Length: 354
Figure 1: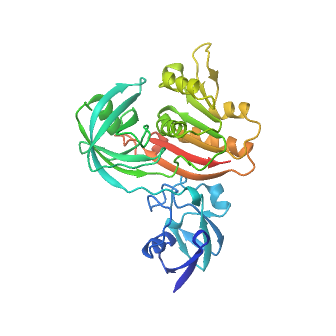
Figure 2: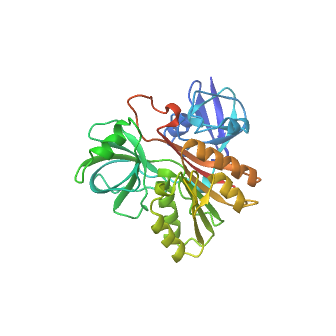
């Protein structure tokens, strides 16, 4: 028995065979539908279920939260209809799809940004061109090690790629990067992936927040927006534990000097003594500066607990808050804990409409 699934965005109805997912059926019938991993981990296909019943197979809580599920959102890549249904995917006007490529790069520069973050600069030597949107990420393979995820920190128009690698204790891949990777080494890169990318069509104010190496995708988004002549107010909060964990501070201060619409606010959560910087949590700093958030886009990247707290605070400040893009990066696989255990190896990136 087959069911019909109506896609409001396309004003089109497709037939979904029993046991097949909505996304699988849409792609089989050559329907353009936003998607990424196809396995319930990225949230790229997130949609509103207007009517009907679906059964969802297991998925990542970072791709679809319990709150979003209760509000009627689903992941078509995991949704098998049990009746005729009607859906619409979110953020249609900003859906961007780039060719997924396997490219080979050569490391051209390495430097230590902080005690636990190393910057990798690479040049594409084969398989290009490599098109991506600011905020997206790629899966990198170093000398036969497991592929791990890293966000591009450069703007898409550059010929080189910049990545930020946070050292994780007992991490197999980041240990290699921090201890053994050399200029001249070759690296395989697959991508791009992710839906928490820069929404160029949005003309309202922007709030950006990054924690630690979450600076990488936010740096790409900020530079892309300002290079393209964005005129709206852009406020960026960079949260770290101590002042020693700040990096690219001078570059960000220079951006603020050259662009009157851009404000850079470092926030220190655990200062050892009196400091010139704002202190506390990123979510609290945002709440101190904004009594109401309306018609904003927010880009947030960093540890899961930080991202969650900022998103929750934005929900308190805005009447209509919706996560329209979200992806989870597995930055390493460690010798003594499994992938994702205790969130040690995760970086979450989201784009939020407020």
